[in-house]
Amino acid sequence: MFARSSSPAKVHSAELERELVSPVDFNNGLSFLGFAQCSLFQSLWDGPFPGVIDMYGDEGGLIEFRSSLLATHGFAALSLPYFDFEDLPRILKDLKLEYFEEAARFLQRHPKAKATTIKEALAKWEEKSGQKASEAKEVKLYGQIPPVEKMDGALSALVNCEKLSLSTNCIDRIANLNNLKNLRILSLGRNNIKNLNGLEAVAETLEELWISYNLIEKLRGIRVMKKLKVLYMSNNLVKDWAEFVRLAEVPVLEELVFVGNPLQEKFAADQNSWIEEATKRVPKLKKLDGTLVVKGEEEEGAEGAEGPEGAEGGN
Image 1 (cartoon, rainbow, N blue to C red):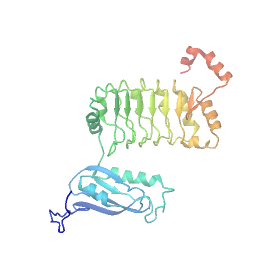
Image 2: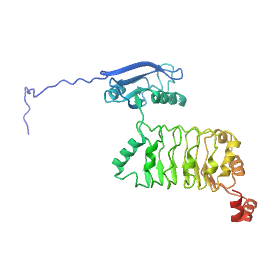
Image 3: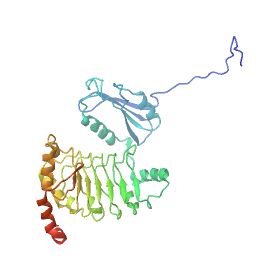
Image 4: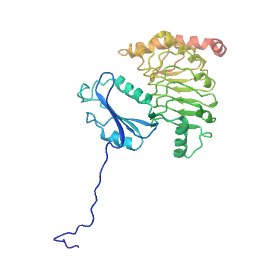
């Protein structure tokens, strides 16, 4: 038991000052797609710095204090309001994805914002996993902060890699896979990839390609993928059958996820018609958008009559 003192003594006192802006360079009045203003905070040092877009929870408005603090610790931080501010939507509804894309592109182009290189990403992965990248069969470089923008020459170290994950970055093209002679699975979802150029380097080994949520409109070059069995490419930009039928040129493709492409969305109200039309053009598919493809007896008989030699001859 302690007796309560009638006049407690002051033990110690201190003053804490929290600097929210200084010493940083502050640039407000930026805007994207004609919408509300946002603010960029960056250190006064030369840089470049890791770039961060700060969207503050579900409170709405333009919240700047966290970005200013990040800038004092060596980040180029963009405070981005996305609802309940100026001419943005009042509530979390009907948001335009292009607004966020333009903000990301702005930060990518900014001279004081720096992306993560493959070399840096590998170093972080090695430290976290305790493995050597040159010896590993699976390497995970997804969701880097700041994001990876280029598949650079450092990938050549992954000589034993069978599965490589580079999803959720800002990669704009496939490159530098020549040394990955054992690669079987490549994950590139949620990037900015516009075409399939560069895959020819792993055409002899790649069995699965996960490339959903990109900007791919054309499938030119897919025919070289001799071992590709699984293709996940939902939410891209393929819009016509002329491109879709290129998938029939992939000799062993059997599983496809294509939902969210403009071509598939034309059949959004009638999934059965979509499956019928798609499998008519790519008859070797066994699974489409998560649905097992059930073929009629006549179709199965026709494929069986072709035989292994006939099947190879047609490719």
